[in-house]
Length: 458
Image 1 (cartoon, rainbow, N blue to C red):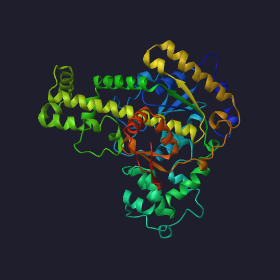
Image 2: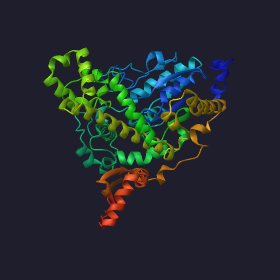
Image 3: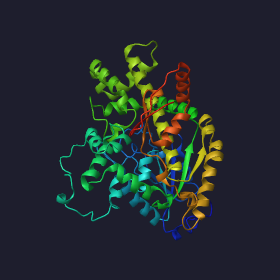
Image 4: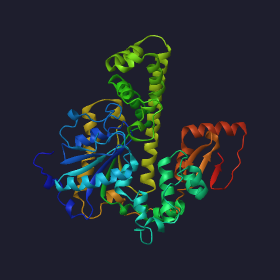
């Protein structure tokens, strides 16, 4: 905290705002969100709320890259390693917990700082994002008993095929394996007899269309970097995790043919090692059961010369972790772009590319910490509805944007894109342009059919 400053001084004027002020630090995996948040504690009286959907669980501290206590520098951290690894901590659970924490943090005259790369957690907290919350705005009395809810909500068939039969437009909007959304959509229909596509096309635009409808006065800071720098850093970080005991952590929770759709086992780095751990357990059961011997064997395998089967399978698993993490980075960046372009969030982007390429404390302070401190100071000085959250109260009319059409790029192996925004971004990508150019030179043409699924020519 700055010399001479007190929580009351630094947060002066914030209480005049009808919406509580919060700082939200966004960014892709490996960009330095947690480091920035902790450094902000030297300038402001803050408490940190973790918004990473895997770091909320107990266990796998190395794999999920939790900040160790000795690196937290005395800054209170909430929702960090506090949830049982076997339960499903949903966006609704996060929203309800974080809202209570924000009230408590403000009661202590501190500034809540939300930190994490799970963007749907953050959407759930600050905007009208969840289906149960949308239902509050449906016409009529929501306090109905089961006999009044239309189609029965018990023993419901929560399958993608059923959703496609009921509402093909909504089914085209989500992936067939996205069980969470399939169940949400069918539950909405079951309880209110409303087609999800019709409901979202109306109420989503009304409730999300203007950023002024955010529940908090938000200062959004995105720690950003170039993809090559992030890719290089991710690869290096995975190698460091392996050296620090990642394999022993995964071995401790290994269950053959486990359910990887719930709890902590959803984390990247668990499923990827299943084939290797199954193989090693079958071939070396005694060493698998001994943690110290297992860790030593893993080190010997990675240090060995040659490419025998154990080393091949282990290195293959590590490369899968790196690949899937790099894919996660791209998804996170696309979603951040959507929050800014479609929902009107005014996000302050801080470029950390140079800092990832050159580990220098002075460079980090000058390029990242100081600009962020300046942004937050300006934000805290504002009264009323903050323009940092709503982009000058500019209304974003989602009704004019194509959010629902599914685009299928045949040039890229029938890759699915959802909405015009994702389609336009995809067309600008290097891989698509290279494939499109090659196909054009070959003279191959694709048909276009204008149905709920659009086959798009290159």
